[in-house]
Amino acid sequence: MAFEEKRAWVMIVVTLGAYTIYLAIVLGRAGDGPLADAAYAGTLLWTIGGAIVAAIVANIALAVAGGQGADRTDERDREINHISERIGQSIVVIGALAALIMAIAELRHFWIANAVYLAFVLSSVLSSFAKIMAYRKGGFQTW
Image (tube, rainbow, N blue to C red; front, side):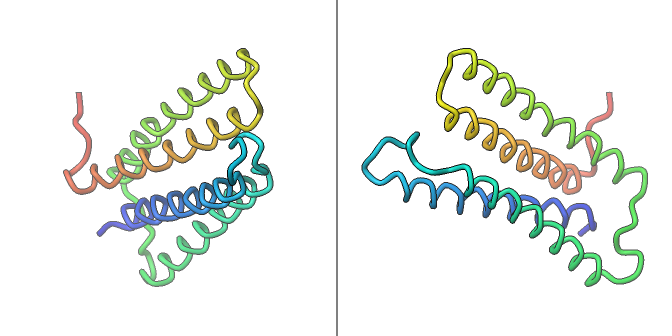
């Protein structure tokens, strides 16, 4: 398995793990009251920060475990990374548009922040999934 494919798997696991923790905490805090009244900001920031730290530590561990030169990339790796990142960024754009519409509609900050966070999560997962599929299928279709 290519080093970049391993990194993509790490990103999926870390992203989904952090988002699951976030959802569990916020949904638990909501109790019987309205979800938008639950305290979310601190948890959101901590889970994002924790995911960043976990991804960095896991990537360092992968590089160390792989030995010298395990993290080298070639032209194919760069092409796969470039295209998969563009695929993931499309979700960020959709999430930004959703947040803009929510702000114009004057929805509560809770919903806007959660829409943006969900867009980041979906972007990361979709980008990583596209990267994994590209490595498994031998790259992307060239036009």
